[in-house]
Amino acid sequence: MQDQTAQIEWRDGRVPVSTRFDDPYFSLENGMDETRHVFLAGNDLPARFLDGFHVAELGFGTGLNFLVTLQAFRASGCTGKLQFTSFEAYPMAMNDLRAALQAFDGLPDDLAQQTKFPEHLVGPDFTLRVITGDARATLPKWEGRADAWFLDGFSPAKNPELWSPELMAQVATHTAESGTAATYTAAGFVRRGLEDAGFSVTREQGYGRKRHMTRAVMP
Image (cartoon, rainbow, N blue to C red; front, side, top):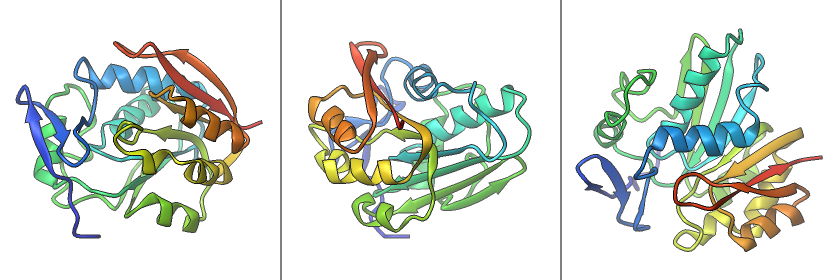
């Protein structure tokens, strides 16, 4: 793993904020509900779950999206394994990650039990891989293809590198046929980047204070 760990401060004693990007890791209102609205519903989940379903993500953060997805996978009654691959440039120290997740009740404890950052974690019904480093360098080398993408980097205004047209093209290249992508942002250049990459893009109702979000489908 690279030695650049996330630098954070705590807002209201429980919400981690990146000091590098001056942006919170999850909604100040309710991070779990945000994940369910934006990333699960935005990708038509859990209805699409099946054995081997592969979720890929830009921005692992606290691991909240992974845990909420795993929780939904288990609740869906789907048998088999969930595949989850995330790309993270600045992995959190485990003590910070565990502290952040304490803000949520009822989540699976598969990450809280870990003593080191989970670059590769295998459970009875999931495989998690977190690829550390700049996604602009690591994603083109990835050999996988995702059924659903969670585009969850920090704000495009504060972290534009993770939303570039070139990276959106790589997301498209690594999307399975009829795959989907969802993100909390409705920024015009992000939507255009997804469209130019081959996705069919729609603007949907956002979560909380965000009026709109983006959903994309690969024809």
